[in-house]
Image (cartoon, rainbow, N blue to C red; front, side, top):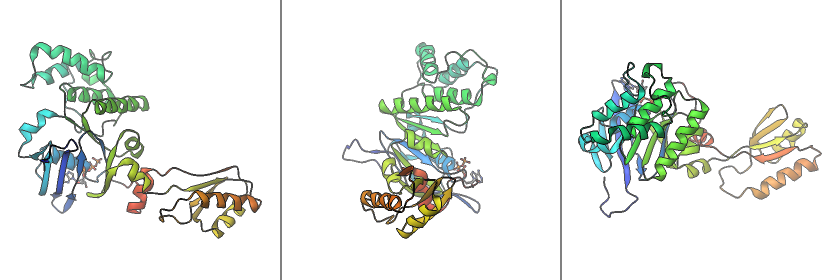
Length: 325
Ligand SMILES: Nc1ncnc2c1ncn2[C@@H]1O[C@H](COP(=O)(O)OP(=O)(O)OP(=O)(O)O)[C@@H](O)[C@H]1O
């Protein structure tokens, strides 16, 4: 629902109990999502967790079975026609004419927009090509484009007009690491200009690198949502000790309450004591280190790995992130 107090923190996407059922398959199950204005919002989940189905409902491409969604304060799919001109979307790979060049695809796309001024069409296309790094390849036929180049062209199409919201379904799919970095930089740049970016991904580290907020999906259900820093902070990192004396290290750490100990070559890892207590672990860690040294364990490395979103996901679901789709 749109807020009436004129607050700039108004949410750009809001869903309540949004549900999509395909026969017996519950693709999206009572999803309540809040995407704040100005955020780079990561929509995260393994394959088959319901991300694309949600995006299709948000864009008015399919009807929900039940529940509600608003985009830019308007109900969807009822107000699709009013809302979509303000939204740039890249969903499931762009539809391209293979026999046309990248540039001509873009010109054609722009020409299909009744609000687009034909006199400035070429300038718009060139600027969009430049933003996604396709200027040099703009004259090539689209059928000769790699998957990554097609993805960039789709993104260029979404950037022809200034948008309040960009919805990108797996935008770095098919890109090499350099291409991924470029798209991430572009997403940050767009966000800094005030565009809210909602992007789906099955790559946890991608979300951590680029997003301010995230929601985590599993099997059609929302597991958690919030600022990325808070989500990751909800999980504790693992203790890591590097030592040639792994046997002794395990014995000492076990006595001091470290659990789930695993030895791999010269590394011993485990859950620090008091996990979940929320207490400052600084002194505990110093004591663990001192105890190891006191017991004659030669400690070459000692620390706690930073908790990641993946740790948070595993802690919340009890399973690894890469569950099969
Ligand atoms: N048109 C459809 N008919 C039947 N089942 C569908 C349909 N679309 C999606 N599903 C099912 O709904 C579930 C969620 O699919 P969805 O594509 O939304 O997941 P996803 O998180 O986007 O995964 P991926 O990253 O693989 O696209 C899956 O089990 C899928 O098989």
